[in-house]
Each structure stands twice: as C-alpha cells, then as structure tokens.
Image (cartoon, rainbow, N blue to C red; front, side, top):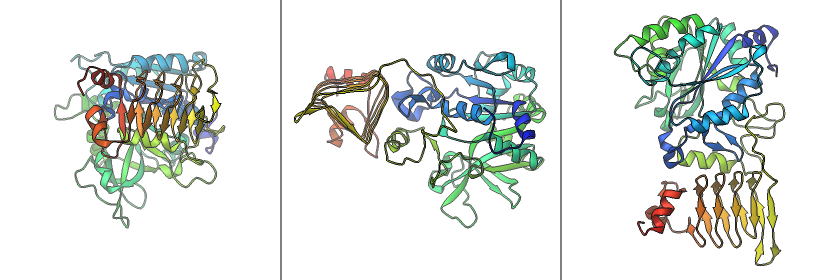
Length: 427
C-alpha cells in the first residue's frame, strides 16, 4: 500500500527505510496478563494484538522492511507474527524479520536497554543498507502515518526526529519530557523526570516523547558503537542517546497531530499506552461506545492481524427469563451467548457466556467460559479462564480485593491461578 499524504520522493525514501519494533518488554504493570506473554502480544480490541498497530502503521505508511526485536516470553508473539504477517514478498525486498535476543555480542548479555537491543543486531541492520532507521515501541495503540514524520525529517534536515504528544503533567514522569524552540528543535530532553517541565502557556501539560524516533542510519550506527563501550550508559535511547545529541546535532520534534490518522469528526489524536490494568480496561471498553475515540472501521487505514478461523458469534434462547443478548458491546467470532446478557463489554474469540449470566463493563479474553448465574462487573477475565457458576465479582470491593487483584479504580482481574486458590479455600 502506497503512503498517502506525502510526495513521490518521500515514498521512495520510505522504501529505503528500515523500521525496528522494540517488542521485548514484559509490561509488569499488567500484572498476571503478562505472566506468559510479552506485552506486545496481549490481545486488544476483540481480535487484534497490541503489536498489530505498529505493524499496520508501517504497512499502511509504505514501510515494508521491518524487524521485530523480542526477548521476554516471546513464543506467542513470534507465533502470531509468523501466522498473521507472512504476506510480504521477499523477492520485492519486503520482509518482517524476527530478531530474538541471542546474546550476539562479545559479553553474551541479554538486551540491556532499548539502544542495546538495536546494537546487538547491528550486523543484520547494516546488511539491509537503510538510509533511515525508524525506531518504534511495540506496545502502544495508535494510528500514525510515518511517511509524514519522514517528510518533516527530510525537510528540516534533521539528524534525529522524535515524535511527541502533550500529556497531563501528573503522568508525564513516566515519559521522556522535552522542551522545544520555535523551530521545533529539541533544546532539552529529560527521561522520566520526577518534576516534569510544563509546556509554555500550558502549566497542566508536558510535551512527552512517544518512543518513536527516526535516525539517519549512518549516525545511528556510530552512536550505537560508541554507546556500547561506555560503562556509564544504561544503553537506552531516552536516557542516553537522545539527551547526548541535543547540544551537537539537529534533534527535531515531530508533533503527533501532524501525522495522526483520524476519522471524520474525531476530536482526539488517539494514542494509548495500555500498560496498566486500568488503562488496558479503559481502552477496550471505550471501543464499545457509539463513536469511540479509535476507529477500527476505517478501510483506508486497516489494522491487519492473524485472523483465527472460527464460526460467527451466536446468540441463543429468547424467553423472558433467559435471553441471549449483547448491547453496546463488541464480540469476536466463536462467541456463544447462551441465554445471558452482555452490556458494554469486549468479548474476544471463542468466549462462552452461559445461561442466566450478566456481564457488564468487562473485557473477556479469548477462550473463556463463564458459568451459569455468574455476574461480572468491571472485570478483566484472563485467557482461557473457566469462571465457576454463580461467581459474583464487581459488587463488593472488599470481597473482590481479598480474592483477586483489584485496582484503585475498581477493575478486577480474574485469573485461573486466583480461581484455583479460591477453590482451595486460600482466598
């Protein structure tokens, strides 16, 4: 798919760009959801995985040379990419290469930071002879035209471009925070500062890095070589490489508003770090609204994924006391709503909700079976969980917190391990 909104020269440069998606993190703030899966492999929006958004942005932008760097419990992620992303053609120099941590360097280390992950694959990257290298995080949900970012990078004669977005100052300490001048040149960059600097004229906002960088390839290679031998470095793009360039190179901010892909009438430049239980729940449940902030029905910017071969969703029984129905909800294929009621919820593939159940404001991951008479409110149900008949969650905060992990915002995570402990009388 050719990139839209950029000229022919930029499209040609996109074909010479190599995208590297950093997908090795655990995402420990997602608690038990990442016990067996890396964060980028976690299901999202009924049928996708989180990493599908970065991969789809690349394809839709016209970037078809992609490396995915993995490390933590990567099996399900590798399997997903192999099954769902094998449509690129090597004879046209298109590919998605999987780059697991292999202790390739002399010290035999696992990836020590984001920059080290790229450095440990430097021989592979050099062999592709890219003009520019696009660095992406594999664990954010958004739609972005990277071609527009590259166009600005070229027009500004930047050495490095950093995508940025305004975030509430109270959460900015979790990001790299930058200050820019009138020409969008970055004049200061602080990684996860305790007291984030506010944006001029906006005391409640800070300008945060999205973890999206474009490097001129030759500069990146030199930086990684130097950083690898510096004992005082944490080998991280945000902590080390980007701040070290501010005084000596052209480091330019790219505003997400200039490249965000939006549908008609949208008010928000949608970008989500779904790295906590609350954020993950909110982002999924938001999609059940009449007009959600993220448009998944945009044929001009599709989100690609591995499509499981399952039958259509099914609703059975229609009597006054037992009616299979779902309202303001998204249900993936293979779901069976058997005489139960589902409201404002996200159900992934092959979920069965049995008779007399009530599921409200919940996210139910693939392969779950919810027993008769269960009532679930504001829950996340982990993959493959069998909820016992009659279980009630979301109505008594004290009981929920004693049995399961419950956030301060009242979201309860139901896992097989916690249900086992409950069955054994340990909760």
